[in-house]
Image (cartoon, rainbow, N blue to C red; front, side, top):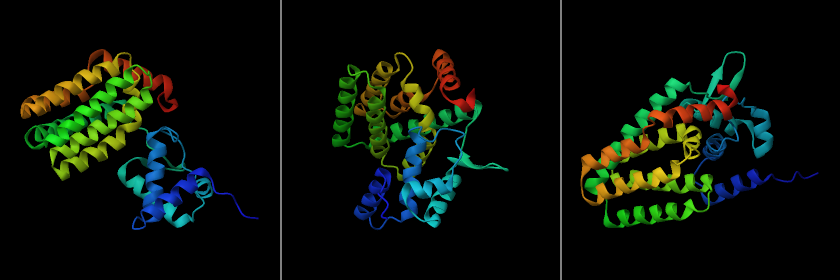
Length: 240
């Protein structure tokens, strides 16, 4: 009897057909990474290789390679006598990662203030308008997606491939946590104001102001940090 493909399996195979040069293990890695980022595989969740093989209807070899790749990035970890699970970052380490993220984005903004093209600035303004339009919809998940577009464009506008790649890698690593910041009261409104300062500094070709604005945007300080930690401990089992 033929086995009906799951929606995820169909999407995976469709993506592979359109991107033939990308290996199956790479596609699986991206699919698992997306599951981690969106919280479908939360911190502390055990990775059942056999179940994932069945879910995606693939062989064990590419799945194993995908899991190894995510272990190398730190998104997954190997626990003695427990197998592989989604990495659970301690609160102190998470704060360090956010601080590093702020510094990297500050560097991207600094370079963007010197190198961004008029077209890139126009696109930043367009994304900013979409974020403002989204406020009335009260949809934090959609706001988060559009916000990610803003930051991705900021990295591109820096025209520094190495720093942009490192920033993206760390952003992926903390995405499952950063998303919780979006849910803090008043955070979406604050994001729009902070983005405005970044854009203004880039338009003014002011690298120092751009870097400062980007770092301030990413840093969690005072009540924001307290609220963020409280939300983590309330919503993520691994921190309870």
